[in-house]
Structure formats: C-alpha cells, structure tokens
Image 1 (cartoon, helix red, strand yellow):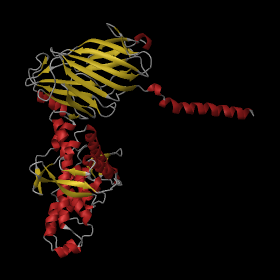
Image 2 (image 1 turned 30 degrees about the horizontal axis):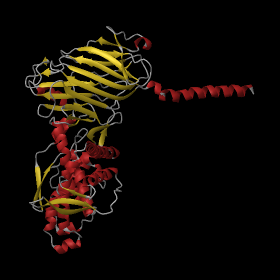
Image 3 (image 1 turned 180 degrees about the horizontal axis):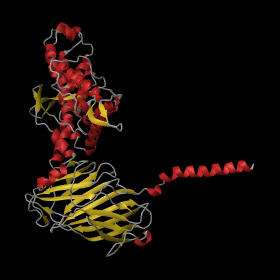
Image 4 (image 1 turned 45 degrees about the vertical axis):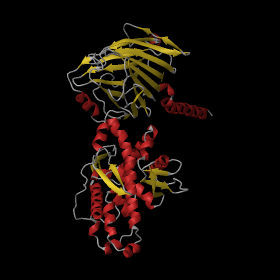
Length: 565
C-alpha cells in the first residue's frame, strides 16, 4: 500500500510538471497585445512636426514601454509628454528630466522621460498595471521637413519593426497647419506593410489593411512642391536620391518593371479594344530554365500539364504573361463551357455603338472545384451586378473599391502559391544542403520548361501542320487553353479558318465560335488586369493607392525595436 501511495505521489508530481509545460508557454501573461495605433501628424510652418500617437495597448511583461527614434539628421525630439485615458478623461503622466531604465515597474508608473542614445532617442514611459489602456504620446520633431535641391520631402518611419507586439491596426493622418495636401502639390508612397495611402480632404491618410507583424513597419515618403514649406533641414540632394533608396526592394519597383506600353488591338463589332498588359508578380524570378525562343523547330505535341492554372510563375520565368495568362485562359474556358455568353449591347444616348459584353448563364452556381477559379468568377459576377451582364471597361468601376482591389491581389497571391507548390511537389527546383528549395531550376525543372517551350513552338507554328495531323488532335479544349496561355490562340484560329467546312465539322470545330471566344477572352481578361494596373500605376507614380510591403530603407526616424522591456 505504501508503494502504491508513493507511486501515486510520483505520478501526481510528474503530471503537475507536465501540465505546467503545456500551460506556461500559452499563458497570456507573456504576450503583449497592441490593438490599434492612431497617429496624427501636424506639419508646422517652421518645418517641424507635432506627432500624436494614440496606443490601445495591453502590456503583460516588463517595467516600461520605449519607442526608439533614430537616424534624425539635424532633427531633435522636444516636448515629449505622455497621458492615459481614464474614465473618458485624459490623465497626464509626470515628465521626468532624466529617465532611469533600471527602476521598478511601480517606480516608473505614470511617469515618462527620454533616453539619449548614440543613434537618437528612446521615448519611455511607465505603463503601471498589466491592463489594457489607451496611452497618448505627444512630441515635436524639429526640422521634420527636408529641403532638397529640386523639391521638399517627408521621409519618416512612424511605426517600428521588431516591436514587442505589432499593432493590429494602424491609421496615420498627416495635415498641414496652413494649407492642404493634394495631388497638385504632393506625391505619396508608404512602405513596410499591406495598406493604402491616399489624399482625403486635404490630408494624407494611411490605413493598414491587415494586422502588422514584427517584420512590418510604417514608413511614409512624401514629395512636396519646392517652396511650399520654407523651413526645415537643408540637404544637398535631389528627391530622386531618396526615392531610389525607398523604392529599392519595394513592390513599386516590381510594379513599374511589369508595365508594358505595347498594346494589342482586336477588332470586334467595329470597336478596337486597347489592351494594356500588366501583371503584379510576387517572389523571385527562377533561373536556368529554358526561355521562349529556344528549341526552334522542335515540338512537343501533348498537353504539358492538365492543371495549367498552377503554372503562372513558371510561365512568367519562360517569358510568357504569367498570372495574366491564367486569367485569360479562365475566361476562354468559361466561354467554351457556355458559362459566359458573348453578347453585344448598344451604348450611347445619341450616337449608338455596339459594345462587347459577357452574360452569365442563367441559374449558374459558382461551384468550381478550384478555389482560385471560384474567387475569380465571384469577382466577375460582382462586377457584372444584378443583371449578370458585364460590359468591357465596367470592371474599372468595380475596382475603385479598396476591398475589391484587395480581393484581386489575393487571387494573384493564390496563383503564386499554387505555382510554387506545384514546382516544389514536382521537384522542379534545386534543393540546398539544408533541404530548402532554391530559386534555380533542377534538371527535372529544366526538362519541364523545355516541354513548355516546345509546346509553344508547336502551337505558334500551327500553320505548318497538315490536315491529317490536325485531325489526330483529340484534346482541342486543352490545346486551345494552352494556345491562350502562350497568347497564340489567334494563330491557331487563322490556320483553322483555312480548312474546309467539311473537315471542321468532322473534328467538331466551330471556327466562328472560337473566333468570338478568343476575342472576348482577350478583351475581358485584359480589362480585368488593366483596371487593376491603373490603380497600381497611380500608386507607383505617387498618386496614392496600395502601399509596398518592402522598401522604405534609410528613412529618418524610427528603429528596429521597441515595446515593453
């Protein structure tokens, strides 16, 4: 009996220890929570800025909160004060001449101070109890405006990366003490997160679209007309110097690189549809694969991959349109399957003209197996509206809504993820010694890119095929999908038109329907992409829009850490 009691005691002790191992790491007491950060910036006539940072924050460790502000140039931080909202009223903290980081939490409670460092400042305050509170930090930055040779500038990091807890939501508003901001006197960009920046009622307004992580930050770059503000720090550099620094590694650079001024014109119903090719591609370009233009005269006649929607990045690497190719192919697929029905509608009150339109099949449910296809079709249906008919260029109005722009970006991200998963699953990339995939194609990957290039050659040179070879083709729908992916569907169509009607009937090919499908799929897929590209181009040019997750390096202010300690 005694042995049993000892055994029970040992089991109890072991269980208690084991339970503690599971409980302690997940205990909320070790995780700060930063619910929201609202930042208000007022630019003064003397080139200084008054900054107010409102923090909805719940500390759970440490004795104080600190905000590093580094890389100040000739700027200084003055008049730092902290207060707390309590029962709807603002309660100021005591401002200390010097701040001792080694004091206890109780000694620091409801006090604030500044620590001067080799890099700049640390703005500190004692938060007191481990409770959710609303703190308000206020301070002035002298020489906030940078007076450059050709224009003036704001380039400041307002939220640091590496915080003990990143804010779940950030809103930043920049105003002028005198005058207003708009696209006639300013250009605006933001970096370090997923959000939007825009002009609104004479203000510059940034809003995060998702919660920030420890690697995110909020940096804003503003180009100001020369002379609008006459005081600040004079720097003997042009604005392009700082813009190049900020754009390095940014999405703005990628977006600008993807722009194309080439336009392809399709004639339908007396209308010329101008198509601008632009796609936002994420991730690094893979190397050592074969390129479009290789293997001239060599062909691959089979379908390279049935799940063609998983090939966007690989197609991009080879030299095709990438994600735009997939969108174009989906439109052709929907038209082939009679889910979308091409129609023409009259437009104009006095001078009537026909315009292209696509009508959703009555009673169709968006029940596609692939998530990315469902999401893309849902966007089409949303843009079409209650009547289920989408006219060309109508998607532009739909994409004026930020939520819809965000959904389009998520489709692009899904396509990229599908492509990377496909390449990894099929060992198309080389692996490092640690087992991680590189951005270099393996031998198997090179073989696959060669297969795609040869298949492209086959469809591009379709006019060289004999009637016998054409009659042996069994997978017309997939072949036309790949012709659309490679943007050579019109070449296939031209060759088919040369064949006799009897021969076409024998292979069950309606050339007129194919012609319509090619015209409409190109027009509407590019209308989708073009509408999004305009919002991207506006953002890259400084007119506001989406922010960049990367870039914004070498800005003034901010730092790489902060939070509780």
